[in-house]
Amino acid sequence: MANVRGLPTTSSDQWIPESYRRVLDWIASSLVAGVQDDGDAPFDAFFGDGDDVKIGDPNDAPGIVSKIASVLIKGFAAGSATPGDHFGFVAQQIGSFKIGATAFPLQSGSANDLPPDDLPIGITGDLRLREVAP
Image (tube, rainbow, N blue to C red; front, side, top):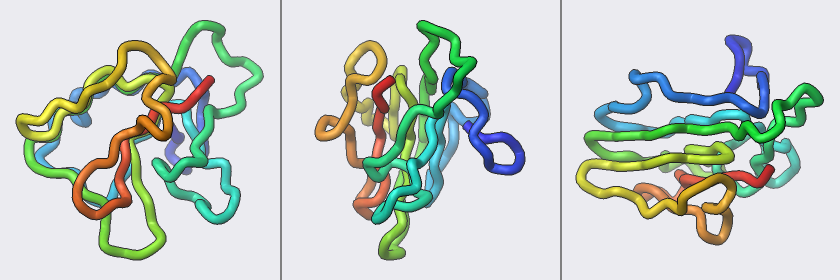
C-alpha cells in the first residue's frame, strides 16, 4: 500500500475497502498491500513481476500480515499490450479472488500462493495474482 505520494507505508497493511471489492473491469492496474517492488533490473517499478517484497518496516507488528481480503471483478481483467510493463494483485495474503463466475483457487493462509504457483490473469500475460513471503 502507498500513501498519497505513492510511497510505501507499512508491511502490515490490510486492504479491504468495498470500492475495490466489486469493480466492473480491471485494466492495466495493480492493487497491493504491504508490498513494494525491490527496484532491481530487469523488473523496475512494476508489481506482480516476481521481484515484489514485503515492505521493510522496523515497527512491523509481529504476526500481522498484509492482506487483500477479497477481490470481485464483475467484468474482465487484463494488463496491457505495452511491452515491458507488468501489473498485479499482490500481498502476503489474498483471501479470495473472482472474475465473473470464475473463482481462482487460492491456498488458505499467507505466503503460499508464491511463484511458480502464482496465478496469471487475463490474456495479456502481464497481470498476475501473487502472495509474497514474510
